[in-house]
Structure formats: structure tokens, C-alpha cells
Image (cartoon, rainbow, N blue to C red; front, top):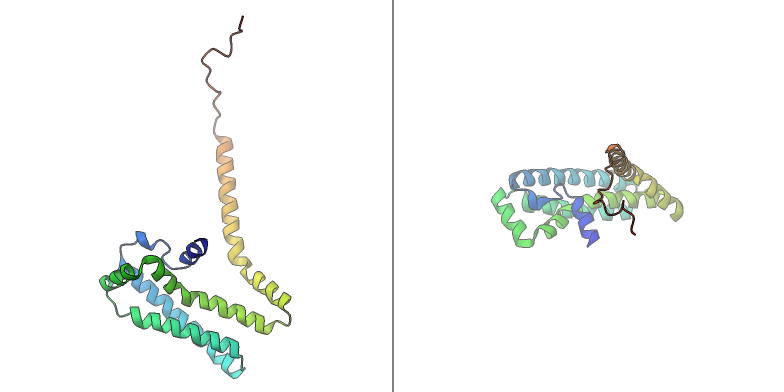
Length: 171
């Protein structure tokens, strides 16, 4: 279930159940699919000449997915999109919408594996290339926790209220 939540966060509208403006959702998704199609075509041009069959194959598969999503949904009205989303389910639609975007990441990793001489070097390069996207959220999270800690330290502490029983001696 955590993997599905992670994939849903990669969509342009992670909280799509809270969005009522389906025209805006459709326009943003179509724009993302256009960008994905352009990215896959950019991967194809140099790699066909360089005979990188794995990259060309991955780019073709994800290009077909992105073009299929674009052709299938770009001509719909906002009401038709809403009906289709409810027919297949919000989560299913979000996962289908994010597959072309994940393909860009997958192809980049395949390129790194093809270029690298050893698997260890490829893994190191892939992890190093992910650092900017991993470090920034960690810095933000640390900053928020530090601000909460400082705010809690500055609050005046109240002494516990006594009902007078603890202060008396028992005879």
C-alpha cells in the first residue's frame, strides 16, 4: 500500500479526490503527457544512431504509453474526464497517469547502467543523481522539526497544579 501512495504522490494532483476542477486537472495532465512525449522523442534521436537497443526499446514502450494517454484523454471534456476517473477509480487513473512520468526516470537509469563500466559504479551514479531530490525534502523536514523544537522551548512552562494534598504531611 505504501508503494501505491508513493506513486500517487508523483502525479500532478496527488490529492485528486479533493480537486473539483477537472478542466484544470485535464489541462495539467495533457501538458505533462506532451512533455513526456517530447522527452521520449529526445531519447530516441541520439540512441537510434548509437545503437543503444535497451534505451531505444524502453523509450518506444513509454512513448507509446504517453501517446496513448494523450490521445485517449486530451479530447475529453471535464465532465467526460470526471466520469472516466470515477469509472476506473481515482487510484487506478492516477497510477496510469504517472507511468509515462516514471518512464523518464527509468530510461535515465538505464542510460546510466549502459554508460557505466561496472554495476557498482552504475548504482553509485544512480544514487548520486537522486541526492538533490532526496536531500531537499530531508533539509525541509529537519528545518520544520527544529522550528517546532525552538517553539516548544520558548513556551512558558506551567508548574503542575496541586490540590494541596501533596504539600501536607501525613500523621
